[in-house]
Image (tube, rainbow, N blue to C red):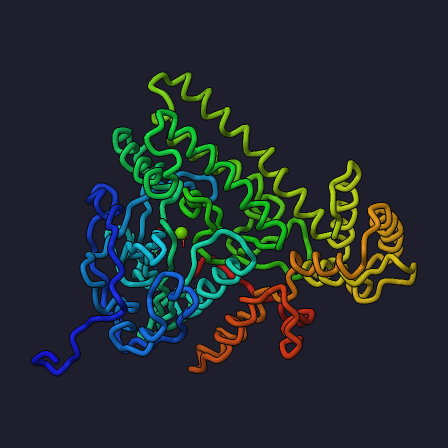
Length: 502
Ligand code: AMP
Ligand code: MG
């Protein structure tokens, strides 16, 4: 016990710090202290993730831990840092952005040797705040907290969320809201925009230490190789292509696919006005601010490609000292994107239909089904989920799925071909349903479900956050007591608007 009566801080157990990003120094990420948040309350804690990192779950009981997660005290043995980056926002280059409200508070070596970075989002102003307040509101913090865990549970590479802290501190957006801080984790938070910042300032010598850090820490298989930059950029390009395919397969729309929101590790990053699609519309725009639909659902794979081209542009000086040769190498890397996307995407659609092996006409079968869903604005997740109940041992109408469909004539014609296709591979109904249910989620983090949890939290109750957290952790499992969360959204859900305001 110290003189002021507090128990000396010992927990959470101090995992070894690796501090290798911070070691890059001020050029990349200067030390910036967090701003204390009044009356912090730990609203949710991700015990399973804590366990994975090596932080004991009991840490959540300690006020010192809440203080850490609120930014009210520093992680022992680490001075928090905020990094500078640039980015193409809606196609236009912005030369300086940066962690305007994000502080890296720890770089840990987890129990199994994995690297974990802990970042607070909403912990106060930094040199990169550009007149903004450095805070995040409860509404957007709940959205980020739950979405990143939902994506993780769906098997999609993403940053994750360790804790959600609330505070009565008022924060002004369109209305007055209250502040919150999410502690998010990832092996690293380097974005495409980090490289763009130095490239467009003609500070090309500063690209190398950053790229070497990324390679040494996150792509050690390429470390020391002469062609390591090419190898890493090829890997990021292919990972990005695969990530886009994974988004498409679950109907996830990111909403703000700016290059500053794209991860150099191929992770889903920065959950703002995202949305899991309810009614399928290939041109669905989830971000109310995105009037032109630049980041519409069907644009995502193409934007992923364009973003990779921006990263490759910014890393040209790493690829060769001869500019022409650098461009040639960059182009050869970029060419890997379309086949990587197709090689990831096609098998996912095939699996969603329950087909075992890919045949020549299968893409057409997929496209016809998607076309039917699109035309009739059928619910994306429910339609695929219901399809698993269609039988091949009878030609009886397929119940469940038919209720989702508007153009039954087109659908029934499609079902004839689909059944024939399934029979041609002697598909077993029971076995196929198991396979399909393992790739077509039953429970999706729909906007209206989130909205209910947000409104409840704004009223001071947090049970719904926990309910959704548990629900979306098992998206593929039948959870009979949760059936209503898989129902078709109410008509009012169509009018929920999410924008860049957060
Ligand atoms: P986003 O659209 O959320 O990716 O944010 C774009 C940029 O604005 C990033 O550099 C953020 O750090 C910064 N930013 C967004 N909101 C705030 C805020 N409330 N305070 C400081 N910086 C912010
Ligand atoms: Mg961002």
